[in-house]
Structure formats: structure tokens, C-alpha cells
Amino acid sequence: MNAPYRLNVAGVSKRFGSLQVLDNINLQVAPGETVCLLGPSGSGKSTLLRCINWLERPDSGRVLIDGQTIGVTGDVVMNDRALAAMRTRIGMVFQHFALWPHLTVLQNVMEAPLHVLRRPAQEVRAEAEALLRRVGLFDKRDAFPARLSGGQKQRVGIARALAMKPSLMLFDEPTSALDPELVSEVLAVMRDLAQESMTMVIVTHEMAFARDVASRIVFMDRGSVVETGTPEAFFTAPSTERARQFLLRYGSASNS
Image (tube, rainbow, N blue to C red; front, side, top):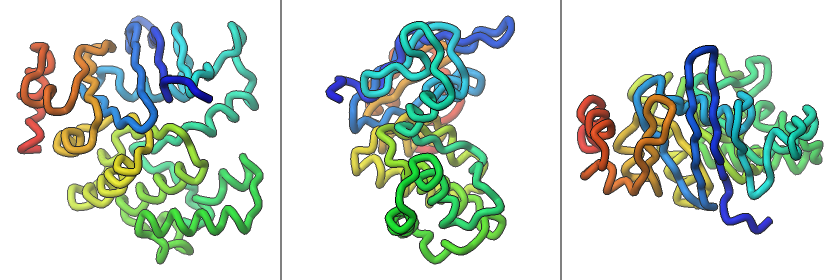
């Protein structure tokens, strides 16, 4: 499909009760871009990711993946099967790993390609082993998640998402639940993906990582996109007072 954008978020709004969590969000991401979503807690970043893959249903607006609308066909909500098929294009890595505890590392990575895509087991196993080598965990392939560190679990989570061969990867603060010494091993895998031109939207508080890796920074506050620009422009000369206050509070990339 020759859509100009891998991801097109068009006028998406979301309310929980009286709280307007997202207010008319517009965001376009081209193939190969790495977009980092920054902003204070409660600004709507994680909800936006969940609306992109329809874990949360937007109240209004559309989300298109490679030009095809996810969640609805015309004005009719997709059935579960059609929505699941659309979601295979999107890999999502959560804060808290979400591995299946009763499956080994290798089985976790193989599960979705085998049972969702119904691909041949031998082929899936070879690709899963290659992904575990890529994230530095081939030697842990027969271990269960309970025997892994947080950083190892998160790297398995990344490998599991990549096993579906998505066109878009979403990361929801993938290092926030990790001890500081484990953060770098997860960020290293994500840096490699950026260098390989995987299209990614990343919610993070890792300022140095965002400055080094992002193609573009999108700064959100109170459910709105307040500012967008290159990492250099955002970190050295933010154009809005809200962004300046955020950087003062959370620290610049140089001291994060």
C-alpha cells in the first residue's frame, strides 16, 4: 500500500467521564520515523497509544495504518476478527512486560505467529530464535519469565512484538518499571530498531534517548499536542512556555 504515512491520527478525542484525556489529536508518522511522545504524567500519551491500536476506542476521529482505518469500516465498528487482523500490523511493548508466565521465552515469542497468523512451526521457531539472538537472549530461550530480570523480560517483549513483523511499533514507557542499571539494555535494542528504520512511536521520560534517537519530538500536555519539532529544536529552544517548564522540571537531555 502506497499511503504517504505509516500512521495517521486524525482528530482523535477521548474522554473518561468528565475528564477530557485527548482533545482533537492530529499526528502523522512517515515510514521509518521514530517519534517520541514527551509530556508530564497525565497528558494523554499512553491513552493515545492505546487509541492507535484500539485498546481504547476513540470517541471521535480516525486512526489509519498504511492508509487503512483501524477499528471501523465506514461508520461500522469492526468485528473482533477484523480488528485482530489490523492489529497484527502494530507491535506494542507495555510498561510491565505482559509476558505469559506459563510459557518459556521461546514459546512467548512464537505464540502469536503460530496461533494468530497460523504460520508453520519450524519457520516460526527459526525466526523466533533469530529475534532472541538479536535482543541478546538466545541463551535464555528455555527459561520461564519468572527467572528473568526486568530488562530481560522487556527485551523478550520487544522480540515478541517483532515476531509478528509489524509495520509500526508502539512503546509505552518501556523502561519505567526497570531498575536504573537495566534501562540501558532495553534502550540499546530500541536504538538498533531506529537505525534499521523501524517506524516507532515511543512514550518515554528518557530525555537523552529521545534526543539521540527521535526523528521528531511531539510534546503533549493536558490532552493536546502543544509542540512538535526536531530533537535539537525542542531541547535547545522550545517554542512554548509549557515545553520550557517541562524541560526545567524533568531535566534537559544532557543531565537526564
